[in-house]
Image (cartoon, rainbow, N blue to C red; front, side, top):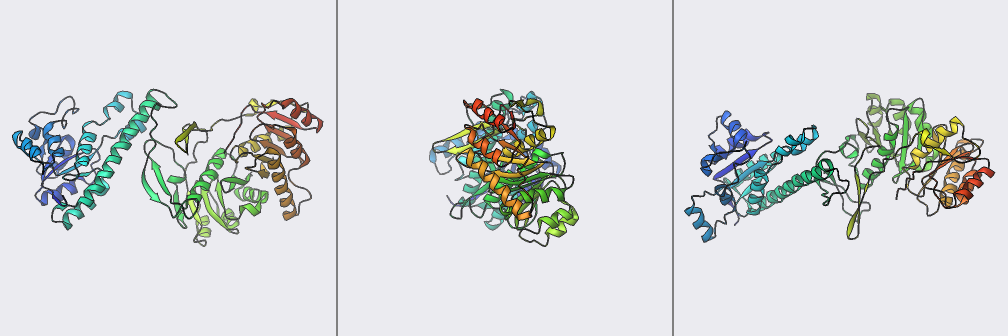
Length: 529
């Protein structure tokens, strides 16, 4: 069946935005309006004639509204196949009237959980009749139009106007698909709440992964791939996906990925001294904290000015004009900040393609949650790497104890290393990275690459020696052999921070002692594959 005239509509909505306007449009077309509870009251208050659902079912609403639409006269009117003789006969025998349009959105379960409601209130906001009507109407979309999103009311009105009070099969199919997605997401939220919050399971028996309102991106990681951004359904934190973009081209898949990496590392310094993070291909290539944002930028850039070209910059405090002027001197893809001053906005306005993202409050780096990675034939799921260390957690394992400054540099290097792809080596000195080695198949090569970058920086800036001299070096996992540690010693590192736990720890500790290094164990590793 192609076009279906809308003669009878059932409206029952939690979100009443646009309801009255829709009701008036339907009434003007001679559509009979059937409704329930608060929806019926809102329509009547607007002067519209509405028939209560209890008049249709010949059965009163009861049990605090829990039972009102779960009735054959409702679902028969929704599910009947109109051109099936047996269905038509059953409708006539039982006085079931056809329902051509259903406008339903569901109890605010997500909002109820988000506001911290008690368990009983949360349970009461699990909609039963609503999803049942939505699914019945969507299944029978050959004859019934289902609308679940107030954003589609205007589209519905346009459809009715264009088709003389009828809807097309194409429109009904699109709305049915959206309706099933809505009920799937709704049930997903409920199942997640029962599993995670109510029962306290880390890994529920069924893991529902969903998102809404995809924004299709220009392409994926490479031009031949397609990509989209989905926003999570249910309570969630804010991050790059929720940031306000002030200017610049649309973000690409790689931009989102790299910007997320920059924001996650920058969040480690929330509330602290001004910090700048520069990321390239999801790896930090320069990080620094200083008394001013401009100084932090200069120190972060000095770590690896070659890799910073075309990178992502994130800062932990309001971006000022002077720092914006400095950033604008090199090609940068994206700049991320909790806030951007008017002066800085003026500076960046001259760079039309530069994307500026304002995040507001930085995300909590210690928040919980799950990380999901698809593999062939399944999903790998783990808790987020939100482990944290303080100075008191460190165990000195060498004869020489680290100085106070070396301890500070160790912790700074460790903070950065947890955000570097494994195998990761990070040299740091006086609150700034001196060299970063990432993603190598062995730790020795990561140590050497980081030292090489530090040597290049010294040559570029005319320093008398690389900043790895007298630095602290962090390794994201233990040194399986002494060679990686010795490479760090050759670069001039004076202190080491690493997890420990290798069967050759004694050999590595002995090498550190022989080199006169101070070394601390964390007991925690931070692989990032």
